[in-house]
Image (cartoon, rainbow, N blue to C red; front, side, top):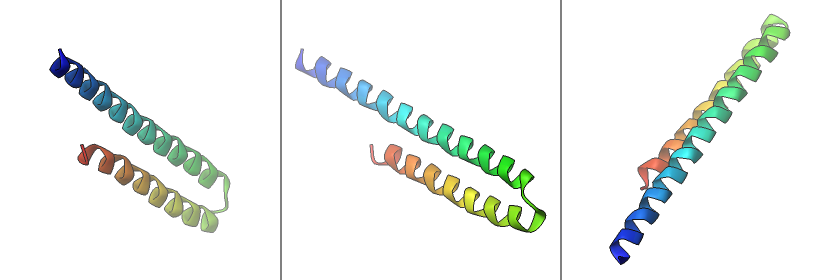
Length: 72
């Protein structure tokens, strides 16, 4: 019975990590969409700077979410 409990705990942990990674990805995508919308509203010169910064933040979040999965 103890092995079954450990297996269930492991599955629950995997599910929680997957949900956290998906939430992080969704947040990165929402941030990217907001940055793109803001860039569309800014003059041309400023839009490029803001867009580049946003892409860097989204990439950092994606790599952070990936490292959680890799550590399992």
